[in-house]
Image (cartoon, rainbow, N blue to C red; front, side):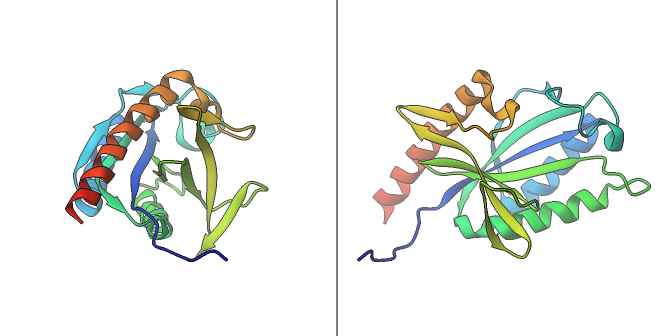
Length: 179
């Protein structure tokens, strides 16, 4: 018989993309006010693996990934996604988004994204939000799955996530030493 126990806290991350770099910067600042200090920024990059969003948002799309210093309980992801949906709505122009925010979390074993869209590999959490298993940690590094978005499968992003995981692991060790 298994005995339930509390999960470790997880590392909150987010991808943000927009045709306007200034909107990304403003939203990162807003998110920092809600979720605490940012401890990692990806380099600025183009979101160019798909043109799926071009019709709604324009082109080219600029992208940043961020992570937050404060760890969260994994079940908080539902409220984070609902909050980021509200932030996206603040930036609507004629019903079109000017920013896309994809929050998720990193644990030692996996990287999860939050989404409002169901699919075979997504698990329902609550309030219309699903968990998308995006990467798994295996044999010393994150590995993509057959459904992983191409940009998350990119070796440079995997390298960033592996480094971020090392920092997260150190933070967990600190917390456990304090407890």
